[in-house]
Image 1 (cartoon, rainbow, N blue to C red):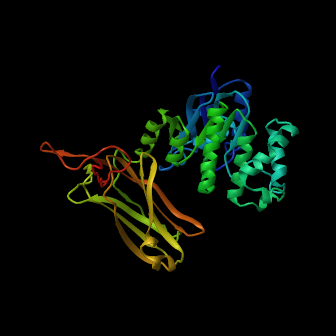
Image 2 (image 1 turned 90 degrees about the vertical axis):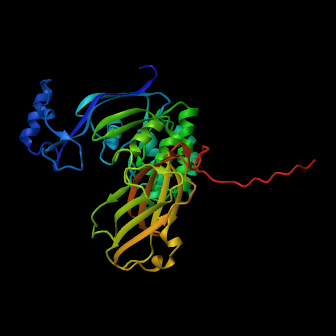
Image 3 (image 1 turned 45 degrees about the vertical axis):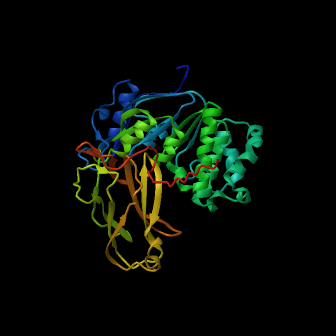
Length: 425
């Protein structure tokens, strides 16, 4: 294990649905007695796969099942998968928040974890006091923490509030301080869950830069969980794709992110439908992409004009909302657009009722795989609904009867540029 920083050996984690333990004292004592005698726990022989989309048939569920994984020292590993796939459970096992049902985990060095907003913080203590407390928990001396204090406060950007109890911090400020502590107190292993999504764009960029610095410059190991594929690709060199509590694939980060983007319905997914949820202010009920004279299974050509249709229901009159469209290619955001850019009245008041909106994509898309994210939200408050990578489609340069219609010259987009050349001598 010389160059191996973390070794997960046949790790499984089982939970009983709805209750703590097995649900009865008799069953709990039963399990304990089997463990004391060194025998296999009979309750680990039952349970079903962690599939959130199907109704449970058993009282036991495997959040993780038979995970064997080696993480090299200095590696930046991206952990991706749908919600409920087991990503956060794996990190909690590594951080010793909970224990595995079977298997062992071996890690070399100190581990700093940022798993949830405010994890490890005492709400009544000030930001400065929490820095010292977290450092002490990690085994650092008071002088070591003092040496890093100014750097931590600077990075977090909370100098004005450093002597204020953290219970008065916003979620963004809490994440800033939590990440600054985790990244600067020199852990050998840095574990970061989706919490960075709470921070603003400037802080996310700074945090990813810091993670790159600690991995490449200092040779530390980073485990990074995120649903933002662009961030994953920018930061990570390799990835692991979780599905229903098991490892589906391990490998190069580009291959893993491509697999994740396509995982919701094959190579192409051009229509999405769902029932309206009256508990939300707005429900997106249908999203589709289409081109003239093309069927659902056809690959689009670079000359096709693509139309996006979005249907949604507004359940009650509401002010200050927007509907956003994001187009991604190779896990990177190409552009984003809002409906209120074209219709300011929708921002002023969106009346209750059913709506249908359509937008035409610009004629500059190159060969490749694209995905669409649709979201609606209240400006200054937050999202109501986000449908990430809900549509996936391919564009190619189609050849018919030996003729090529259109052209592709590489790059993220294709465009025609005017060149004006004169002989000056």
